[in-house]
Length: 190
Length: 393
Image 1: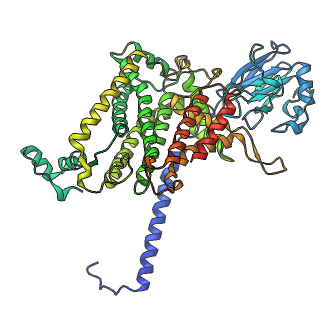
Image 2 (image 1 turned 30 degrees about the vertical axis):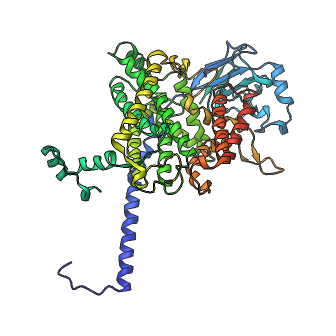
Image 3 (image 1 turned 90 degrees about the horizontal axis):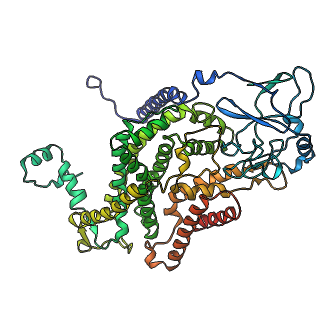
């Protein structure tokens, strides 16, 4: 400033300058982050997308050995009523053979209303854990892979009759969504 | 920049403008008098061709945007309306759609030319890196553009590529949800892809400007890789190379027009004329041809890397494929430092020359493999070609 007596620049003055520059820079950085946050956050799912209802499914029409596909949160969910042979096959596999070890018992549920085990019902998100394709195997005419389950046509992942990854690039078993049996013939997903 | 080297224009209007804003002097310096080596071969046309394609894509894209509707309910039908009802819409769209392929042809030839003649070497490292950044931006733009018609391949391509990010440890799933704006590829995803597809070409334009600015600092490389020693070794850009570029452009445009008018869908996938269905994955998801080599690399990594003698997975096969695919581009970024030879051009490097062609063949094989279903023997051949790709680097 013109009306202040000029002081000789000494070390103390330099330190003061550095301090001011650093604090001003830091404040500007904090400010920039505060502005960026709402912009970045705006790309996350909006309130109406989050408020998706759960899906209730009537199972009475599904016969043994049949599969149905329902939509939950914009994704397909596979519901399969397995045959005894498929259940036995899945339970006979030693866990050491599995890429993502999980027993078949852990992948099915008890009925909430009767407390019975319901190993015939397999409920999974029908999205390959590799890169998100929908595996084939819901129809009897589809390819089922080498393990009597599902086959992903995109990159060749194969899932067994419990939906566990057995071969190919997918890292994990088909995901189990949150669900419960509301009575003998109905399941609520979500 | 050019203020000290004003050209004395005769036209009074140009003179008046140039004294206040030396645009004409700048154009003269950078595009007319600019000294260029006189021994260019036709491979040196492809930079200008790529620049032409960028302008053509922006021009046609603006008109398509006037009719396109970015909504999952209307996107597919609005594109069909452009094809059937909009005046000349079919032609504008075919020019734009095949323009992406032409752009990649021009850019890939441009890149291979740079590799063959050592154009990435000192002092052109930054010029080269800017080019790789342009390639990355082009890939992002082309990918998002392909999603817009909302056909089956659009939807499933978007699903597969966005899911690549789920391979990132810990935060992968959160990032994917963030990219989607939901729990699957859906309306929010389509909307943001449209916004970015419109934005990124202008970012590319800006980086191309820097790329050309950097080129005009170091000057062009040439087939011998030896810098011009004196003014005798160079010619002014205009009229010598403007004329040569115009000739090259004419030949290129004939080829482009043949594709647009006689085989407009030859490079596309027929599945993309089926409206997107989130419940059914097409039998073979195949990206556009210009992504096939990278797609093949992604699929070639099928083993988990474990900590020895345990089941703790260090790098899953999924993450490995993704790392390898991005690594394929990252390799290009650091190429100026990987290649330590002081000799630029492959003309004077017999072994490098052979390896270069092995690399080209590997890229072509990867491209072929990427288009095939994930079955043997294609997987194994793909793994070999991937190995060759990286071994070369």
